[in-house]
Each structure stands twice: as C-alpha cells, then as structure tokens.
Image (spheres, rainbow, N blue to C red):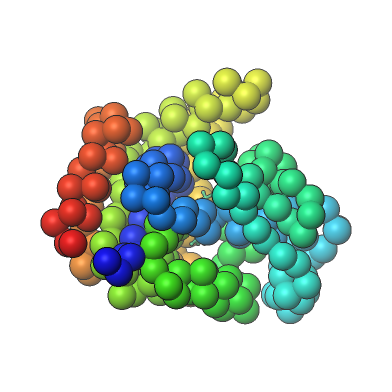
Length: 223
Ligand code: C5P
C-alpha cells in the first residue's frame, strides 16, 4: 500500500510534536519536526556569533550544515547539527526568542522547504510545522490544523519547563507564546495558516491519546 504523507500544522505548543510522534509510531512512519530544523539553524547562528538579521549570511550558514535526526525506535528523537547533539540546546530561551526572526527569511525557508520535500518524496512521513499543509506538502493525503488557547499552550510549556528545572514565569511564557503566534502568522512568506482542506482539531480540552485516536481515525477514513 502506498504510504501517505501527513501534515500537522498549528501554533507553538499546541501539542503537534508529541502527537505527530505518536501517530508516526503507530503507522511505522518517519516523524519530521520542522521546527527543530529552524531551531538548529538559529542555534548555529547564535553559537557562531552570526548576525540574525542577515538573510544572506543565514542562508550561507544553512547551506554549510547538516541537520539530521536519530531514528532509534522507542527513544526520544535526537537532533544533530553536523555531528553535535543539539537536542537540548535548541530548546533554550535564547533560541526560542530568536527562531521566528531566523525563519522569516525567504532564502532560509526555500532551502528548508527543499530539504523537507525531499525527505517526504517517497511518502510515509508525518511532518509538523507551520506551513506543511500549505507550502511543503500541499498534496499531503491528510492535513491537520491543531489549535489550543494561548493560555493553555503556555501552561503546557510551563509544566514542561518546571520538569526540566527551568524557571521562566507563566506570564512571560504566555507573552512569548502570543508574540511568536503573531510573528509566525503575520510574516509575509509562508505564514502560519490553516490549509483550506485541513481538518481543525482543538486540543485545549483533549488528552493527547484522544487527539491521536482522532487523527488515526481521520487517516483510516482516507485509506
Ligand atoms: O515548532 P516549534 O515551536 O519548535 O518551531 C519553532 C519556530 O520555528 C516557530 O515559532 C516558527 O517561527 C518556526 N517554524 C516555521 N515553519 C515551520 C516550523 C517552525 O517557521 N514549518
């Protein structure tokens, strides 16, 4: 049976990555976290002292780096910048605060989108991000747009941070969430937007497993 591609878009902390990962596991598909790719480039630029406003320099930097993911089953997926494991570093506050700027440049997006399309060319990929259903995989067989209120999403991020020993306040996280939503959905190139044919899932009051179940049901209906 031909393997499908599944696009999952939505704002920060709507639960996309946790859910996309579970859906991919159930189907035996590859999971691709496109946000991690933009974060890795942002981390690379910050750690080499690059100018984050310089589109050309960011594009050149991106062309010179490999961004890869570990694929070991039942383990947390790890992210690599060349040979460096950056799984934790790309979640820092500094990266989070700068990633929307880095990802707003056309040349950066063109290169990222080309890499993402090539990974999905044989099908069997669950990809999450902001522009997957609209730009990266407009022909994806199943498109989901996940939402949740900014307050609920900030609370989820807050709980994750506390578990990791991070201390940013809930108020700051809520503000950051709204700021990133605004930047991501108002940028000129590939803004965060629901594809016309995407199915909206509001996860505010739903458990993760319930959302996964609903998505698997939608996929089954498309087989
Ligand atoms: O998904 P995550 O919150 O890790 O993404 C980090 C940032 O990367 C987003 O806020 C957005 O600015 C950018 N991004 C993007 N396009 C994607 C995925 C992420 O612009 N497909």
